[in-house]
Length: 326
Length: 285
Image 1 (cartoon, chains in turn cyan, brown):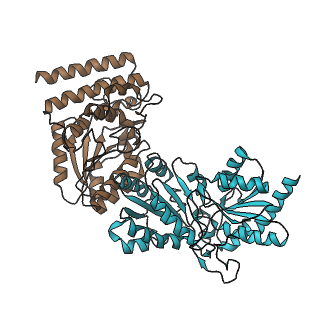
Image 2: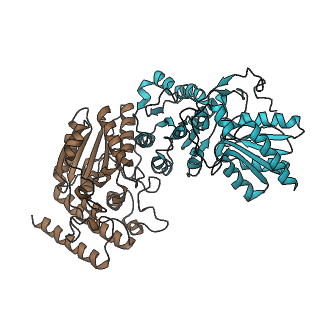
Image 3: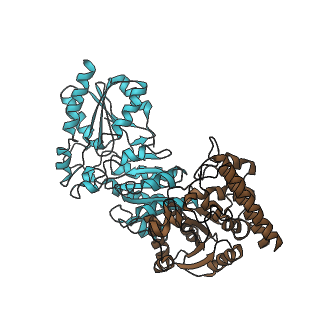
């Protein structure tokens, strides 16, 4: 295990915190340093944790009402006039509903707008399918100029927020609603565009992002007991993809399992497959949502029903290993 | 740094607008595609804007104290390209590259390509939000830049425009002047047949915007309206500019079918001849 990780990851009393909290708190810290940071909200200020920013910098906070398309456009204009706008809403609306505005007003002009997609993934739970963004990685990673980050926990969301404020250009940050295990610490390395090996192994590479990084570590722990050495890579940056780290690991393990809280189609798994097939083709199994919408339920129940738990990773690992040995 | 181009007389501005019209026809002919009616209809406004109203510096397009111009209906960009070239942002010789491969003059404008192009636009309704964003940012910093946004009337079918108007009215965005090209046509026909906008003035006023109406071909009236707009306190001003689509070329005027197509050689020649005679008329005054 990467020595910088939280030592009590597998304890029952592991600390639980949400990525949205990490973002909301770190944004205030980033905004204290950089006076050009402004925040825009579409009537979901507290949900996306922009309330902290609003309290600290009311004059730099812009409420646009339930109008995500206008919000993205306003952000583009503010960026043209020198600001670093952070636009927050649920991922289904932002970048879901305002994708055209993201594409043309922001990305085409390569403007310094940071898009915060809150409540992403199945783990939103009871709100149901309409509010569970399972396509946002797909529609963002396809856009030129746009970076795509999916932090794995509270601590990494903090680091992503600070890092995004320091680089120029449009960026999408995917956040979740629920409290999830804090697996990294302040000491864990984080660099946009650099995948981190959280656990070394030689039999299979598990590439995960977001809440699935924890599931991948749990799976690797289980596999170890069965004599299978899994390498776990936290692939927080979907774009630009750290192909070097992925390819090197694939050369060692000869098979890959990807894990994401997102549609398998066009998400993390596809991004990895695109890179692998070009440079070093190996067997890949993909854990994710399989071409279906979600539904209401508790996050844990949903993850089980839609087969995105550590158990599903374990069985996919076995399939992948079987394929490579055939 | 000087922020204004040397002032011209109204008669000179009108002559200039007609020169711009001729180049619009030439560039559309060379391009073989593009929009004719809107660019011709807005030539007077663009001329008034860049040669009188704006604080800008063509040799320093990103000058911090510049007034911002956002084009929301990106498809009328030929008039923007020609006006920018006449104002000294780019070479007139480049106009013939419109819509050609490797050109900086894209079919719809790209901010990163050509100096003076403030925003990328094409999909309708986006420029108005961007203009509001710039105006809000300027206001936050207590700066003096004025923001202008040019919109089409067919564009107002887009819901985003009304989100933007609601925001501007609520926030009383003070340093923003919106100019709507009220030419009554859109691709599929007349605006009042496709998706009626009237009473447009009432609609906009009910969004807490201050509305002025002008003849969009009277450059003097346009300049005066922009001055009035600056004087109106704590409200966004919308100038509804009544224009003739295809203005200056009789066979194009008022015809929706000329919204989105270029002239062929015969038509361009005829059009340029008509614009020339228009120029003579002005000179006789």
